[in-house]
Amino acid sequence: MSLWSRTRNAVYGEITRTAMELFLTRGFDATTIDDIAAAAGISRRSFFRYFGTKEDVVLGDLAARGELIRQALEVRPADEDPWTALCAALHSVKDAAYETNEEMLAVFKMIHQTPSLRARSIEKHLQWQAMLTPEIRRRLGADPDDPLDVRAEALVASVLTCLDVAGEAWGRAGGRVPLEDLFDAAAAAVHGRP
Amino acid sequence: MSLWSRTRNAVYGEITRTAMELFLTRGFDATTIDDIAAAAGISRRSFFRYFGTKEDVVLGDLAARGELIRQALEVRPADEDPWTALCAALHSVKDAAYETNEEMLAVFKMIHQTPSLRARSIEKHLQWQAMLTPEIRRRLGADPDDPLDVRAEALVASVLTCLDVAGEAWGRAGGRVPLEDLFDAAAAAVHGRP
DNA sequence: TGTCCATCTGGCACTCGGTGTCAATCAGGC
DNA sequence: GCCTGATTGACACCGAGTGCCAGATGGACA
Image 1 (cartoon, rainbow over the protein chains, first blue to last red):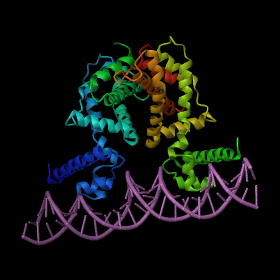
Image 2: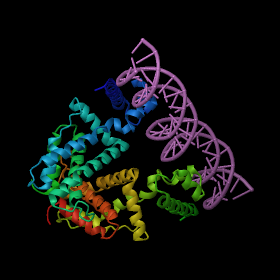
Image 3: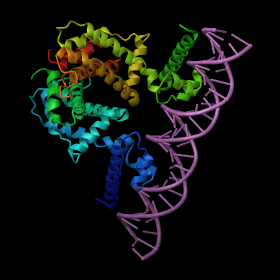
């Protein structure tokens, strides 16, 4: 680990902390990149060297978590039915990115109330979908490239949709109930089975 | 129908036609608002008086179709199970907005290949979700305002996700198979039943 | 230690989407 | 013919994001 990457990580974390603080106080849309750059002591141009978009500060490592979910899915027993395997894979990956439950709640609310953030969040879920679908195709014994076989896409997309619905409900409910329980209830409603 | 609203409708249609032609030849991102305004013979400012965003030219009346789906859902038999009722409601609303199948195919491909369009399209689906959920809550006998009851949201969101998956597959397959068949296959994969 | 190279940084100019404002225009009712 | 209200174009402005370039800084090597 060279000094370069160490300072880079430090700056990365500093920008994230500074920006999130501004977002949670002023609101996402009311905070400009110039505000963040000024507060973090860097130039506006440098901000874009660490984050491609303003939304990436909030949703940054979502892509990385997709990879974790994919790995968790691969480990599931081969004879488990795809839906159960997907649900289990999602369960096994917790949100370790947040310090407190309150912070996580505030971020969830912000994401679901800010259209641009919501849209980006859904785009990330689409990436997860693309990452998880091949494994489900394999488990279904489907042709990996047949565009007419929509079963795997539908299963993966629906499970992720349940996660999204659960997340929104969790935010609306003020985090009073474990997110997992809401997800299980959503999944059960869609796929039958109590 | 006054002359004002007649000319307004005419201009609206003219902008749509001009813009769609540019989108389908140059691509969505490569077409600027100035291009559209110049080609349609209006000012850049006037464009934004007819369309809130560039994406709205492509996805304009999607919100209106949501209302049609809601009405179709209301008409379904009261004792039909929610999933079946939702699927039937979606079936009953066809895409009447496109002249030819080829044009519809081109637009679908464009939407699914352009991130900003894809995101907006999903946002419109979220609006549909909000419109359809109350009726499903009613059919489930659920408290209309209980944030912890996620069944209705999950059902509606999953059905719409199936529609989205089917639409994407339909585009990838070059429209070789009826969209309805792909939707049915996706819905069946998710909700059990072969 | 001094030199060279790669990387990082800040600043500038630019594009593009989108908004507020204001004066000019134009249809329609009196 | 005149007043009212909607529409229009033009201009200025903002914020996100990008390309470019000169300068600073750390690392490797002689």
